[in-house]
Every structure is written in structure tokens, then in C-alpha cells.
Image (cartoon, rainbow, N blue to C red; front, side, top):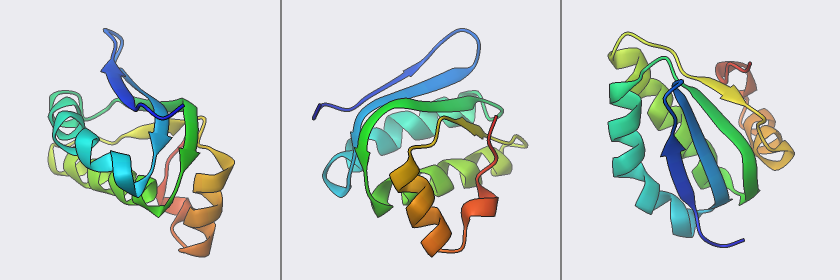
Length: 99
């Protein structure tokens, strides 16, 4: 799976699918920023993410900052193990609230 998609449903869930890599997160940034500003208390579902690297962690932290600035708090569902490993190595795992 190489294409990356970002969709928000009517229930406030933002779903990501595909690869969240340095080469793909840039295309998600502006659309994701818009969705997070519109729904700062969203749940971000990563269950359909195939591969990820440290750019994925940077993207999620950016979205968290935007949500906090808008008075909300993002929560994450189904964080990929590879992303959790990067977060642990970076000592930021506790910053990622999960549902």
C-alpha cells in the first residue's frame, strides 16, 4: 500500500490509511490541519496505516499542537507498533493519548 488517504467521518473520527512516511506526510499536512482545526476533539484512527517512520510521529505531534491551540485534545486509536517504538525511543510515548 503506497497511497495515503485521510478521511473524516460525521462522528469526528479522522482515519488515515496507507504509508505515513517522510515521502508522504507532506501531502497530508494542510488537509489534516484543516480537519483538526474543524474538529479539535477528534479521534485519529491509524488502524489502516501500513508503514510509518518518524515523520508520522512529527505529523501527529503537529496535529496535537493545533488541536490544543483550538481548545481541544486529539486522541489516537490503533497506533502502529512501529510508531509506538519511535515514540518510546524519543521519550514522547506518554504524549500520545489513546482510546
